[in-house]
Image (spheres, helix red, strand yellow):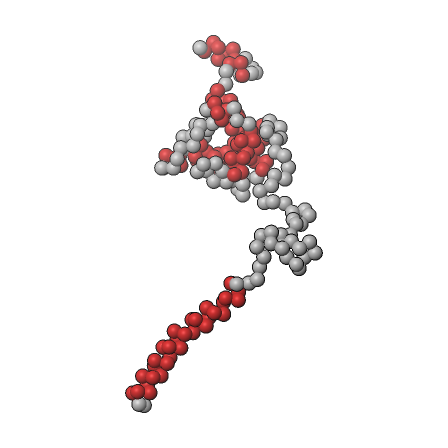
Length: 188
């Protein structure tokens, strides 16, 4: 084979190889430059001449509140609810917030930010719905537990947090039954 022809073919293949991506890029332009309407632009294809279409009946925004959420827990304060709340709290909350809710869990000890104590005035005065919302949506560096903790369990955890707050801030008048208040007074 003549070296001149071989060089020509070689240069032709290189040229076609470089030219091919330009053809491929040109093919995509039809997909990228589709006819479209800008927001609120007139559109003759619809009877009302509007490109923006009305919302379909029954459409619900993804962040819409579907039902009013109560400020206080809708669950009754029973031993069963508190036991369920303690169980869920120990699984999901105690690693960061500590077993007593003081914010001294094992996760912050390993370098993560310290969560607040549930025994602060601000959190003692917060409604139950605050705890429900924080579990649902997360807060600060805490991520959402909505896909891990069922709604009734969120309320049970809120009830258990109230029990923790009461246990750390109870007065003698709060203690009832079996003469326990009298024995505590005598011990002082």
